[in-house]
Length: 208
Image 1: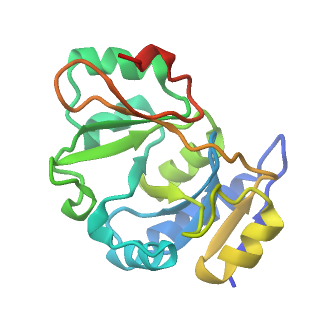
Image 2 (image 1 turned 90 degrees about the vertical axis):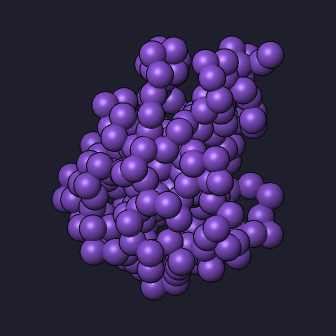
C-alpha cells in the first residue's frame, strides 16, 4: 500500500511535495492533484514505472496514452518544438486545464512519442503538481487517475486510496478531485489548432 500524505488545503506541506519528488526520482509511481483531476505520474524515463501504470490501466505502452506535465512554459521548449504561433497560443491558455499536442523534441523518450513523433504537454493551473514536477526533475509522465472500467476519473480520496493505493508508492491527498479531463488541442500540424477533445478548458476558441 502506498503512503497517503494529506496536504493542508491552503498551505500544502512542502516536505510532502519534496517527498513526492524523491519517490519519483527513484523510479516510483505517485498520484497527484491537478486542475482537472487526480493524475498517475512517474519520471518519464523510468521504464519500470511506465510499465506499472500501463498494467494498471490495462493498455499497452505503445498506445501512447501518456502526456508530459511540466511546471512552466519555459520547460515546454525542452520537450517540444514550438513555433511562434504555437507559443502565443500556449502563453495565452497555460497554465490551465489543457493538453497541447506538439512535435516532440529529442528529450522525449521514444516510447512516449506517437508515430507522428508528437507528445501531449500540459501546465496545470494548480501549483502542487507543478512543484512536484520541479522536484522530480522538470517533467512528469502523466495520465488520468481512472481505471479501465470507470467512466470518470476517481475523485474521492478514500476511494483513490482503496483502489489505487496498493499500486502506487505515494498519494498526495488534496481533498476531492475533479472528474473532467483536460481539453485536448493539436498544434503539431501547421499553425492552426485542431480541437481533439472537449474537457475542462473552454473549447470555444479552438472550434473550426
